[in-house]
Length: 142
Length: 142
DNA sequence: GGTCAATTGTTGAGAAGTCAATTAATAGGA
DNA sequence: TCCTATTAATTGACTTCTCAACAATTGACC
Image (cartoon, rainbow over all chains, first blue to last red; front, side, top):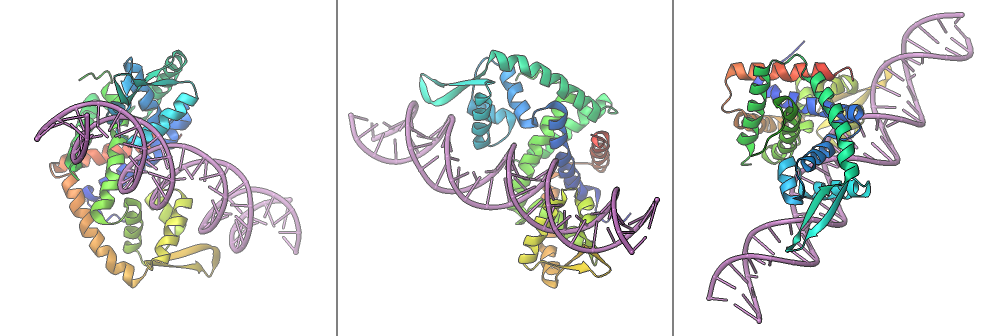
């Protein structure tokens, strides 16, 4: 097996390949897309939140946030209302229905992640999440 | 800063967030998308290759491969021809022009990756690529 | 109070990926 | 030899993301 790439160079390839695999598989296993789950999870943790802080927490573009939330609203998972004292911002919150549903999703997600990381030692997880964070910082300025 | 997620659970979030950031930044820095680069790089390493092995090497869907190559062909970067002894397969190869261009892209890519990993020790790189591979294996069955 | 700048969310255009269905060509077995 | 299964590539439908342009609202400062 030919491999002319340095370790450094192939990291990018691995990351991308892994992600391309994760996304559809996560969705098949859990019944919901990873971003959608992330969004709901954030909402689950708070009473009410506006879209821009949600966007920062989930790390995707604000346009994507808008579209996700519109769909979730159409599905009866969340409700949205304008902030009465600042009409630019929109408050989002889970409906009762949404709050119930996410519990099931959470179980599926955990079992998916457990499978993905089943042979990882705690130190490895620590170091992995440290490294991912550092990479993110290193390119944040671009 | 509230953080109710276990290390295990947030790995997924980190991975996704990192990737979402990498893709556009890579493209801005190098002038070419990461997948496109990967494809060209594979072609650079061989004389001629058919699409399905290319697909396995790059880890994206065969439909995506077809579309990428059609564009690269339109841009004069690659040529395609059918295998005369098996008319199902298509051989792809870089044009002279393509071979020249990729050298420049390669330089940009290396400098991007260097920036992203500038504070990583060799052992870390080793361990990171090991872990990414293991994750990929762990979910390969789904 | 009036103007200019910043913030929030929305929308359209474009890139990239998956999946599933389709076409064409080859291979293998009765 | 003929029928069936497999393989390669293509295409269409769909999702998700980014970016850039836009509208509406608010804030700051003269």
